[in-house]
Image (cartoon, rainbow over all chains, first blue to last red; front, side):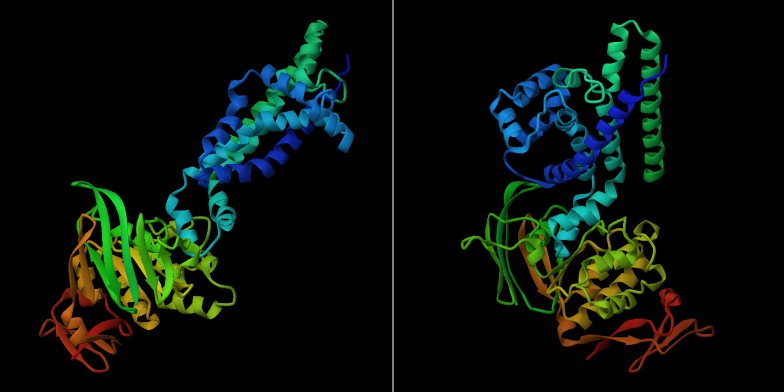
Length: 221
Length: 272
């Protein structure tokens, strides 16, 4: 039976887009959290970390309710930007952004917090702003943490299942990512196809992690 | 003139108390802060730099108010004209020596950067990353970097702490030369008597967050010291002493430390 590559490409596209957007959102957020003395910082940190402890079905359920065209938010989205987030690829991207956010923020925040405080203080006493200090001094010195954030986000998005099932369903070419396809094939007792998808995901995930550990070793030595 | 009057609660070895320092510093002077560990020397530097905020107080530098708690003025470190040399040097490891200094340099200040690099003797390492440098070299980079914005106030936190005698000696010379040439007011925290004696014109001893003694180094005021280049240096085998000649002075010394000096090196000469 010929393999349908669509779920694999869809998975990689979802993971790639999620990682890219989280790099743009998560890194500044991590930087802000690392340096901020904002009083309600613990609240923000707890919210970001929620997906780590909640069952994906809980996150998925709330997002389903929120994204549904019958809800105020869903209706507003549909009316103003003609965007439907339930059972669509865009919806998966938005859900993955929320779900994978801690995987980008935590390593980068920890990386920045572990740098000597004197580096940022030195930069401030040299008249440089917080943002210039972040881009020129702090981030370039925590490359391993950035790399870890990128890879964990990518790998975690590849591994999503419950959340995708809740808000995406199983629409070929739209929301049928590899993890869903495996479940589907097993349900249909197509073990051979399930094997192929599973082996591809296993090989891919291992290769990515190997790459990270290899590079991180070179960077830190 | 620099006016300081700051109060901040601190935990000292003897228990919780207030650090309270009231001090006036002549512009262009080199003041040494000495005292036991945990007596508040570094805290005072950090308060001046704006890295910590006192509970109450006022800091005025050349009629420029940096801090006034009563009027709710508290300038961030970026807006205070300071150069801070951290004990761990805080050089940025991702940048070369040149990039570290350039990072802080106002644009178009190439000549200033070159002058500092020359004065600190950093040319041979200019394109090296800090990790390749010795402790003394790193301190000199940190000093050059701190001075590149021509600060009114130079704050040095134990710059000699981790250096051997030779590196200390070199750094002392560089520091004294820069301090004198640039007229920067300098506050130096040090544990080493020899550094203090060689550099400072005023010594303040702090104990438990208070000034215990405040001494002007008299001979430095009456007998001024100037730097002169060595014109001739040679060892007299027969009499077993060094002969060192500068523009104004001829020195004879049996101190083996002269072995490390070369023609052109700057040394301190007392002028009566």
